[in-house]
Image 1: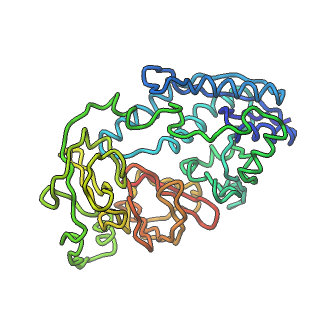
Image 2 (image 1 turned 90 degrees about the vertical axis):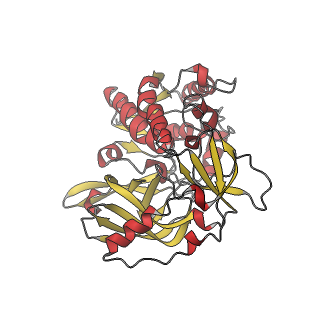
Image 3 (image 1 turned 30 degrees about the horizontal axis):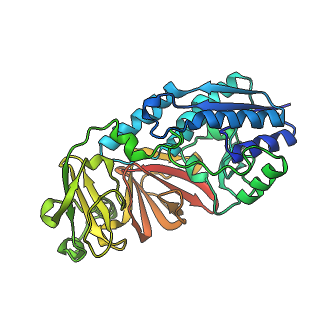
Length: 395
């Protein structure tokens, strides 16, 4: 009998995942990860992890499976939180959920599960796993979940073949309403629980306040750049090579104060991210101001009016050579090679037509349509059909 450890988060998805595995004849163990214990940073009075671990325990009791809690807060602080602050200080915007899956759930947590004699680790993600043969060897595929609204394969875009080999995604074939129905029929305490929001560790904390407790405020200026600024209608130079052209397009515009006018002050460029609209507290503009660039070196923020401002859009992004990750290593591009893919630069985005170009200087993702708010530090992931084959950090 194969043994599976399920990461019970106290939510409805992992609860139903555990139930399905039990139905399929696995020996199931429920494990709750406690990732945070520094209560000085929990901004709300609720203690979400206590409530969540309690719900997870009730679900395990109801399903009749053994349950324990593991405290991963030290590893979490080191691998996720410290990394996030470092990234924010450099003016990048990391994605904690993608990192949490790569570094915690399918690494630290998986190792604990394997030490308990588990054959697999299961989570409540809306995605599926496929298996094919390449050169006589099994190769695992990360496939989109059946529920188009909830497909979460993006969050797993940094997993490796070794991690996928040991992973199970029991609810990948179901839609969210179907999962809730099963939980209702079983009368699980989590059946009507709302989906968790915010960082996957600090529960109800909102990111800006969390950052502000760790990064020192530093007053700086907010500039507004007009949509008809000549920088947006400059002639495109002639390039000697495709690589030069892609490098130029991926770099985008370097903003300087002369391009805009001062419209306000902020408390630190490192708190803000491209495409952000809230939290600027600048009034009196005809359309809402969106952040088009931040510069942590000069501590300046550049904004533009409206969501169609030309400063928000770019067609090409670059991934540094060391940050290109292929789940399907057998499909990895060699220098000079290209691939037509469907890609996305954030979780909720519809897949976009794009071409990958691999050069010595990095991997370039050239979109057919200009993309809004391509953000450094976030992940770009690319698909062939409904299979996610690779990803990388936007640089």
